[in-house]
Image 1 (spheres, rainbow, N blue to C red):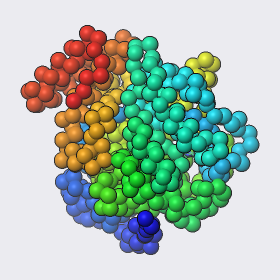
Image 2 (image 1 turned 30 degrees about the vertical axis):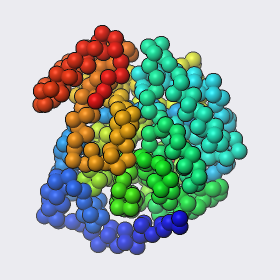
Image 3 (image 1 turned 90 degrees about the vertical axis):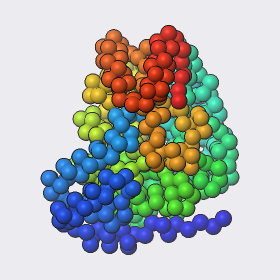
Image 4 (image 1 turned 60 degrees about the vertical axis):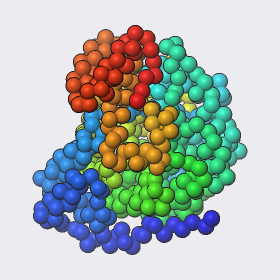
Length: 470
Ligand code: SAM
Ligand code: SF4
């Protein structure tokens, strides 16, 4: 079926940005009051907030975003690890270390055996979710290879007998037939970033290869959702064009999917461009987004599409990640490697992959350190994968999540999966603080039966049972 890409209307977005300059405190306060009702914002309202620069109003926006995040997600943060299986790429994205013109990069496709080795190392860090990625090269790494990799990952058990329970994927846009094929495979979310929604910038940044076609990429999620996929994730690479434009376009994209398919995006990712070797557009970009504007755009996304997960990667430094957790981020990577075979290399040589990865990482703490820090800050690191495994996906998930009911499942599941982590992988200090946190969190479960059942599950996990969830 012919699909239209006219849901991103550049003139409308530019017009909103220009007409909403210098908003008054009254205008902003009215919008913030509306945001607290958890029904989202219009594009005009989001555009108004993106033009705020008064520090007091910005602080107010962050407080409201936190209230919204707390109301929907509580203090949970879902954790995952990215796994790169090939850096071959036929595209030439000007910002990426995997681009075809980077002749200094040693190219590699992992064998199935090597993929299993990487998975084992990830599992031994306590992860249960993987985000599987590769460059776009239809000769070197086919969809069949990618699907074999998925089954290989699920087949691996670590020393505790644990397995990866959910694989999300991030690969180049697929055709309708390819989506039909992928929809038969047990994956969670399919993600692709538009990189920039601004067509002229997009075409400049992607001079070569299949990725040059703006519309093909923009219609990826339409093809996915009309060909059997349930959960999709969108994103923009901030720093290629005006962040206000990208944020409004992301919101417009999310609304289009929700209105057309009854399923908004499961997640929105907000990567910022980081330096990458031999990638000219990754250095000193005209549109580099500073930390304050970055916090603002996260707050605006949280208010505009309150029920959509926001993903933050280890591209960002620890201090900023900690702030963003309070403003709206709900899923994070930890202990990441962005080079192919990077987990094994780091495990063997303890070296970092700054030079050989896709781009430079700024939060280089191990998973264990991230988890310990989160617990000490009062966040519940969650390894939950229950919704996906119980078939609470797509429209079913949206139905459940919109009225906030998800909290009654996610909160106890966050606690049981954290307990598994503490028993199986944590050091003594993390275990001490983690158990204390679980005790405090239990008292927040007001439903008596649910609280008792959660306690029972925690006890059974302590005694050796695993994978108990609601
Ligand atoms: N190759 C596929 C594609 O481009 O859709 C799969 C995803 S690619 C491995 C992952 C993402 O990394 C890209 O979509 C891009 O947004 C991001 N990325 C590339 N270079 C980057 C850089 N220098 N800094 C931050 N993120 C970058
Ligand atoms: Fe290839 Fe993706 Fe990097 Fe572009 S962003 S060069 S498509 S890996």
